[in-house]
Length: 356
Image (cartoon, rainbow, N blue to C red; front, side):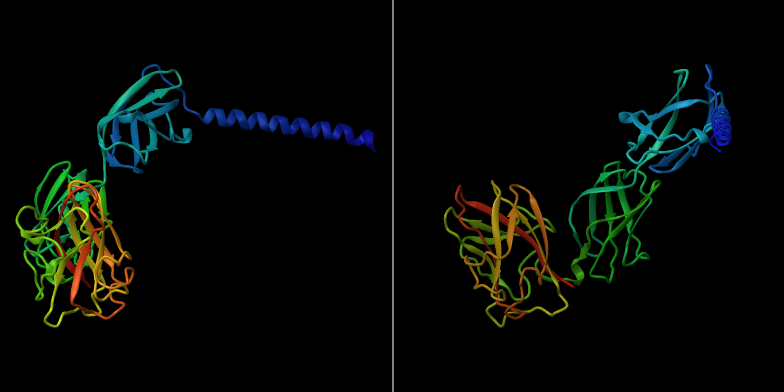
């Protein structure tokens, strides 16, 4: 039996080897041949964003081994099954740099040729002039890929017409219409597509405003140290509330309503404000009579890191900071600073609001 099976196994093995060889030859025959004189004629589309499929047509385009986008030499993935003598099909890499640039092709004969192309980039918001707006007011955004923005709209009211006042590659100014929502993210659209802002923009016309250009809701200056409405700095409008923290005083500066307080309805679930730092970074704490610790410099529950010489934005969920543990009637609301240890510090407050 062993003598009979042995030739049979040998024959089967030889057949398998022949099959593998034929398969390999067939696969090799599918690969296109490189040319010493490639002639690219048309790339379609002529511009595109990351992930988009491109088709290069021409002659002598076979045997491509490398494709990269010239800016930062970002390489594109190529499947040889999508490369013939007359076409190359590939995708724009996810990390391609948005810009006018060349796409570089190198074939297996090490012949290099280039095709001009424009990589489009989605809008990228890096900074905002303010997260708060009033109807018919303006917002300025800074970032990248703004020059070709064609439309801006709010998620919560896509019919509200936002006017593009001006734009450059890195900046866009928008005129905001009167709207009814309290807060919404912003959608920006350019040739590459649309993006939605990470943060909400807040409608001051629908907020419970405690300070805008001046104290509101019956508030008065309730500071332990020097404080006043000032035109020296402002985030919105022309005025802010200047709070001076003298060295070593540990003072709580802010507001009071001694004639009944301010009743904050339950639907207001955020507190928001801007603080402009002094000459050095400082840690402040928000304090009020409605929190679970007495008003003043024993309340360390909500830490606010205020960077020097710049406006710092804060938007806090009232539930997260125990703002209304002891009722919703605010008599005192302020910000206290342990110290300061180094020198007197002037901190500016603007746009103090509650948001639904």
